[in-house]
Length: 271
Image (tube, rainbow, N blue to C red; front, side, top):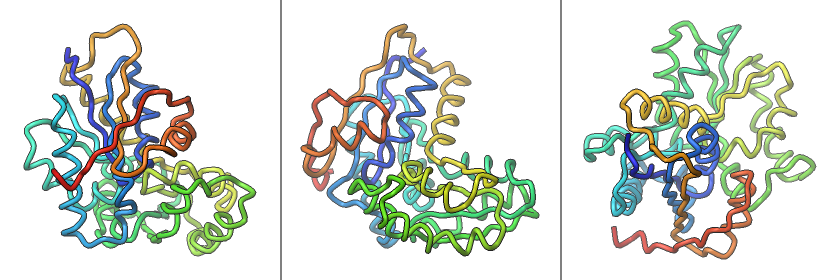
């Protein structure tokens, strides 16, 4: 048993989709969340910059006595997971490997679509992990650089002509290729599930990277006997690197419950 909290971070608010699943699976766990809202999105940055930002995010979270850190960001998971794992004495888990495994097992026709940030697609990490699990799978990858800023600005609902137009353009080649499974390779994308599903059709299975990552964390903590002994609900603390004013409203949408806790602002450049 381990009463220490779980640290979770993302470039912005997308990682809250992983927190939502963590709460469902592990309601008694305390969670410290950091969203680097001042530097979102990470997807168009160089690998060196992403590693630098990820190290700073982890350094801030390590000011708390954590039992594990979840990289609830596809971009960081594809680019900096090995570095962060090597540099930290506590478990550091990403969302990419669990999502890749789920997609490799879910496909029926062997054609898997992948959408993510430019950095995630450029890394080739999803493809390598999918082929390790399912060598015969064909992976069709598509970078969707406008999705994150649109989601961060609340443009993710069906009926919004902007997000529907962008999604239709991004997803058309994957739909035409006949993929039967689509990896939502960024934790912001689950907010777009309705829009994406409408574009792809009901026969396409959507793989939520944040949810798959949360399930992997829950399994790891259970196997290592590190679950919280608390019988009550966990405590949540939220921090951002930019304005706090809009966080509670948008975070409530991502999480599916009202965020009433105060939100701290962090000068992440100090870490």
